[in-house]
Amino acid sequence: MNPTLDLLYRLADDQLILGHRNSEWNGLGPILEEDIAFSSMAQDKLGHALQLYTLLHELGEAEPDTVAFTRNAPQFHCCQLTELPIGEYDFSLIRHFLFDHAELLRFEALAGSSYEPLAQVARKVKGELKYHVLHANTWVKRLGSATEEAIGRMQAALEFTLPYALGIFETTDAEPDIIRSGLFIGEAELQARWEASIGKVLAQTALTLPDLRTLTPVGGGRRGQHTEYLQPLLDEMAEVFRLDPTADW
Image (tube, rainbow, N blue to C red; front, side, top):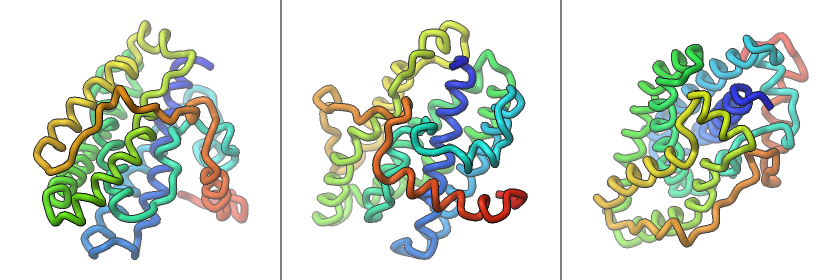
């Protein structure tokens, strides 16, 4: 695949799928504030996905709605972290924390991309992601320094989620060309920045960051290999589109 298309599909699919997952907290959050926060972040991510799918369309791919709602799981390039069910709040919070730290750093780097349309989108998106990271940091610090039960649940969620989070940085065959052309700094550099970023926050809590070198990343998503949860999610997402392809999203 063309390096620019490869990168854009990965970015857009991550945003679409996690945006939909976050939206599932609407009405289910532990407090009203979190209902609102996750719904707002979900809306942001769907907006980011639309901007990225629009760039793909400008490069000759199908229209955003078609790309979003007519592909099956093997045609998606999202990391597996994004497609897991929302589970308990501690898992969704840790996923939000790990993913959005990576995304903020990613879009800060993309603001200097050699592909100017993507750089322009990144400059807009990174501002919203700063608030996502601020929200995640606030709650991770609060719950990660609270009661013994809260700390235990957060630690367990962190240890479960980290291997999936490492899959964020899975590379594709296009990686050398992406770096060489100046499209993006590359996944290895992003991961190094991410490790420093999350480590700084976790050091302010009672949580322990495991040695990431001992963990086996859960990959495959960038190459169309997904969990059992993605296809049912896509079927649900596409229901309205199939009933009325002219509907807006």
